[in-house]
Length: 156
Length: 208
Image (cartoon, one colour):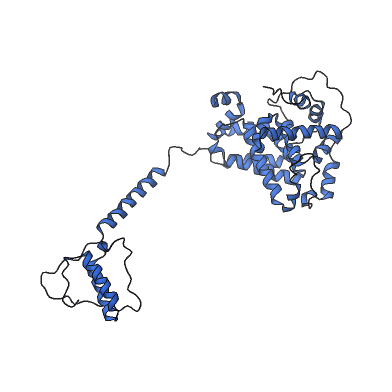
């Protein structure tokens, strides 16, 4: 549909009635070399003719995998590793003291409740053996708050 | 509207057939468009070697993209949009070309660029010498005007479609084409008054 606002000169040209256009069409019309023709035709043929199956998609599989992974992470965060069982007798456990040259590693947990009590006590003992009693006291208070019912050997 | 467009554009239908595995459909498309595409590239970049490289690149991209093809426009718009992008990439590859980007004002003279290799005076003169007066005038147009003119002449695309191919507003495409035909008329000897020429049609034109 012609745009009535188009100037006459352009309008005439767009209608195809322009001598300029007529002259251009009379110019030579070079074609690509035959070698190019062969190259393009070969390139088009070499592509697999079978179109990709549109129904196949890895998206559902990826979604399911991400859901499973998320559930596993949540369960691990909520329940954590199994807690150490209380010993039947009152004998103090022989602790294997780990001497830390640096600050003992703290588990990347979101709350004290999720830290393994046995390992936590070992860390506290290591602090005491290293002479870092103030830190050990702080950790013990945190331990007590997290595990008020945990039976701590007399050595601690 | 999309269905109507598909019914009207036979070439889009051929491309869909090629997408679905019909190699003969590609041959038909290629036979129809190889001439216009080659001439568009040749007369736009003004270098036969570069035009041949770009010609390969355009078809390669089309073949590579065929699985994702959806007829949102005429096939010619689709094909020449690829060609436009290839040409733009080619121009950008030569940093000396930055000066050829025209100023905001279309009437102002083009900036004086550092000359890229393919535009060396001797190379360009050789190309222009081989052209007629009209084609030499086309070669002398600023690139955006030259492209608008070539797209119109080689494909018959409307101004709206040319705007779509070149990623500019319709008014910009219209201005470029207007300036192009004005400059070409000025640079040529007075043209005869057109007779009652038949309306241009851009249906399939058999090329030798």
